[in-house]
Image 1 (spheres, rainbow, N blue to C red):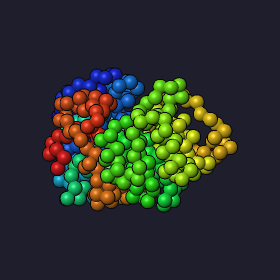
Image 2 (tube, helix red, strand yellow; image 1 turned 90 degrees about the horizontal axis):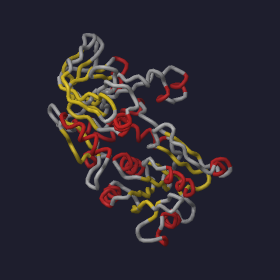
Image 3 (cartoon, rainbow, N blue to C red; image 1 turned 135 degrees about the horizontal axis):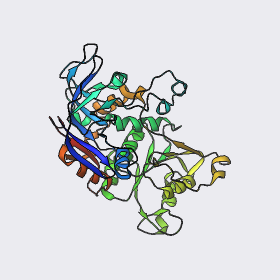
Amino acid sequence: MRAVVYRGANDLRLETLPVPRIQANEILVRVGVCGVCPTDIKKIHYGTVPPPRVFGHETAGRVVRKGALVRGFQVGDRVALHHHVPCLDCHACRHRAFAQCSQYKRTGITAGFEPAGGGYAEYVRVMPFVLPGVVKIPGRNSLLEGAMLEPVNTVLKAVKRLMLVKGDTVLVAGQGPIGLMFTRLLALRGISVLATDLLKPRLALAARLGAKRVFQVQPEHSGNGSAKSSSGPLDDLRVVVERFTHGRGLDAAVIAVPSNAVVRQAQTLVRGAGQVLLFSHTRRGDAASLDLAAICVDEKDLVGSYSADFTLQKEVANLIFSRKLDVRQLITHEFPLEQTAAAVDLAAHPTPQSLKVVVSQADGGR
């Protein structure tokens, strides 16, 4: 089979590998679609894990072979895969800290080499401990929609970490694919969303997805690193927040961009006992200065959220397959398998017209 193999930092090669052999309690899936995830981009660009590996974990495809002991799936089923599933029994799982579970940290889907998702290959082997996370795709929905279950799951998990009530105000900083998912999921819960981004097309889509207010920012290198509008200081983000919240301050801020300056600014914009949630700060060693008294005295929580929550799969599937969250609006570019490197590059360097980038093959997104 064909597979795109990671051979080192910024080195992806189209190679021929053997089709994975499955055990009696596993399934073999022909990959149809695999999304390009920022987590994999960082691994590829910075060479943070040793090669060789086949990346790609936002995967949907068709079951082409199943082991004799597998129940609940048949050859021909169209499925969305889930590469991390916790044990549900360890100390971390008892605290619902599933991403800290040792089993969860194992990747249960592979196209060969050290398991790394395998979605940038024609076939993947799905191991038994992640089979509970596999979801069948309804007939009216596409493989493209199925491939979005994993990223939407990560966002829904983060939303549930926020202590919000209907009518609260939340800033979503960054309206890339992840930020737009936050905007929509929060709007569906009755939250008033203030969406910010550098790009007008993304803000227009944020408004269609339910943002009550959108605001275009541009970086200002004034020493404090804050973001201001292009129209001048009288209309900066602080003024917009004061008007949007009637002077109360934000109930929460979601940081969907890896900017320390935006984190510092958000900390000043949330009310006392509000929350700032980090979603994009995944590169270790990235230090930042913060006002610790704001956390202690003002009781402003700094919260992190990483990866998915297996127990949310049914809720996520309902959101996507019912099209309450219509993920089709987020997918702007499809690349064939042999152009995976170009797909990764576009996702890493987005244009005003690009949002979610996927690699499509086999029967494509159908």
